[in-house]
Image: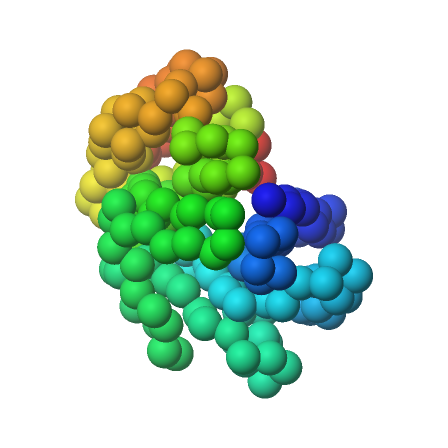
Length: 207
């Protein structure tokens, strides 16, 4: 399995290329507006971009997800609950799909946004256990994403409750994520308290 991060420092935005060495295919996750770098890297590694996906609808930058189809034959993926203005293959919670030796398992991870999804990756050339989790904007390093960016106070409380359930029911059940979860519980409780009380300031690594 090939995994490469693309980091756009001006926006604090990370996107990813996941490549299958067996089939020479690639998936691009959370692409930035200018998609040229993905095509250049795929060409250098003799990969064909087969899939492109956003973990959630991004309100802080313009996604480049619709820039791929005019340049190559690609399948656009989204969470089943995403409301979008373009056609996608909608992925349900727990659904799996394969790309060579790479297996993707979809996790519906609401909280930051209601439609948010993440991807557990299994590299079958190494074994059957998940080895990577791509959490999008939901789970951060030592922190969790903000649940207060969409809607009013009541909706913020609902998103915060969804974030609690995501951590307790989805992330905590996965051994791959258990250490990260221990590191984020403190930040989660702070986020939920602020969401319920709706009092500034927010403290978050998201900005």
